Length: 157
Image (cartoon, rainbow, N blue to C red; front, top):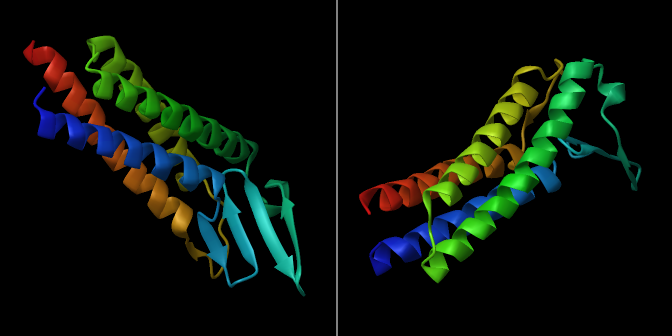
């Protein structure tokens, strides 16, 4: 793998890890006004200056949706960890097909659970997409690019 491609792959993997981790940990996939934010790790509700984290049960979403939220949260964090490892392997010049495949499995798992969490969300009036959803999507796109770059580089050897 050439040096410019290696640097680009490292940057993509770290960008993806940051996007996925902040996307699931920072919550705010959907917002209703300035008071209520929903994400895979629960809700954040501020009323009269009193802010508190709450679960997802009160939203009226199905049990499958709540399990998809947990899977999205865990999948995003695991994929972020794997992508940091992938960046380290590329930086050390020790990439292998196994590293690329583990990264691909982690990304596909996070993407699948994230898509299910998005698709099964309960209907809420005035809800609009928040920053967590955008960060998760950007993280997935960068992760796919990094994993494909490593997979193609190991295939060429």
